[in-house]
Structures are given as structure tokens and as C-alpha cells.
Image (tube, rainbow, N blue to C red):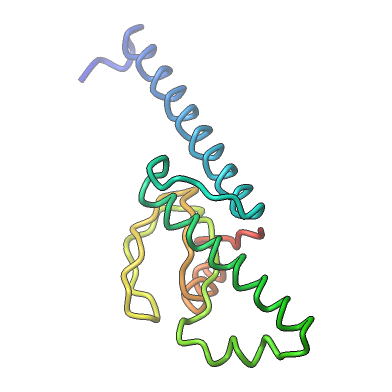
Length: 142
């Protein structure tokens, strides 16, 4: 509760902005490392990840494994699309939020969120497409 015109308040405000930028950069760096490790199929110890990062990593690894299986099936002459259609899990899409939104109920009846700007989540395709269409989020291409 400082007077905003004082030097101390100005310094604290500037320091807070620097801290926010550093935290954002750190989170982006960790996200990139997770994406690169998942793409290279390298394992990451769950002890070194937050709960959210572990969910992201598992989702990416599941997607990578699913793609590898579909590729193998295609090479061996089996229809990967047919097997994907028989799957019980709804299709999920990785999105990055552009603004803050409260928790939402997914088409699969699970609760997702709340989300802040720059958060990344894998949510059911129907929900993801709606959020992208509303301009709340953008697809993350891997």
C-alpha cells in the first residue's frame, strides 16, 4: 500500500514486471524442453516436472506413440483410421490460451481449467475447436 508516485513504489513495480517476465521465460523454456523430449521419445523423470507439465508430457508421449502405431499399421497394410475410430477416448487437441478463462466442463464430462494466458492444455477436440473459434485459444502445432 505504497503511494504510487514514490521512487520505492516505482522500483517495486519495475522489479515485479521483471520477475513476471523471468517466470514466463522459464515456463516457456521448460515447455520447449518437454516438447523436444517428447518428439525425440526421450523419457523425463516425473520428479523434475510439475503436475501440469507431467500431464502435458504424457499427452504428447501418448500422441507420439499413437502416431508411431498408426504409421506401423499403415506400412503393414492395416487401416490406422479404422482402429482410431474404435477407440473409446475422444480426440484431444493441444491448445494455448490467449486469455484467462474459468474452469470448463469438457464434452467428456471432465473439468478443465481454470486457465491463464499462455497456459497449454490438451482438451477434447469439440471443446478445443469452440475455444479456438471464439478467439480464446490457438492450436499448438507440434
